[in-house]
Image (cartoon, rainbow, N blue to C red; front, side):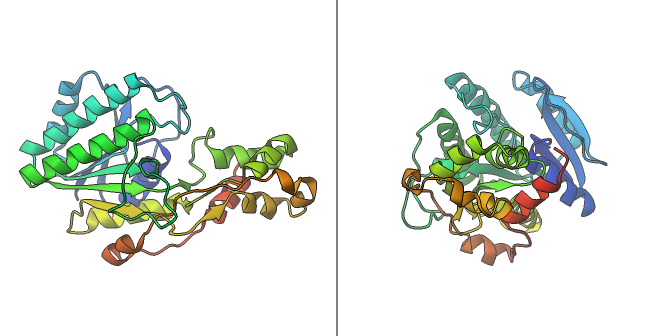
Length: 298
């Protein structure tokens, strides 16, 4: 039974990955930001600990006590529900993550996975791959880029067992209600046509997946005896949010003015490396995530 630590353990991915790992007989420890007040149902058989970004010595003591085999570092502010990811957020998240990475120098046996975001990439007409160029157009993307580079630099110097995993958009019933898909499904349930028209005219597109598939990919990397520098987990295809609206409201298109629909652009991830390396397969679609949210009580 391996010990695994998940920071940000009560976020969507933390919950789903915890469920997978508990089922697979891992001993899971969830680290939570002590300053956050949002309450979510905890996963059974996961031991949770509240930590503070300001007191890393306490975190170090906890790590020394748990003696983790694996650390998954989800924990950070996320601009998708906190749109004002400011310079102070960049500093706090960077300082804590650097200390966590530096902890690996004297604990090289630990497998460390740092999930990053597709927001780090500049727009490309071609599919984004592990060699594609970055662009820091916000403090959030700057945090992800700078700490990914720092991790890979330290990995090379000290021969660490570490990987950066770039996650493209993914959703589930555990998605924070401030994100787009939960808001969209809520508007569909309430028949909020003003909001739905606004979204439809924006013609939003992206590389969207079901979060369970993404977390299954992370699990496969956890158990795999390898540590690729960078790995993309994505659906590998473009999906338009408008198709979700049309699924639940088949006649919605008759209510809108086609001239107002804009031409959107978005990146699509190349997931072939992950599929081959991890023998990774998709079991659900983004539409499945939307249907599950629609059936949920939230």
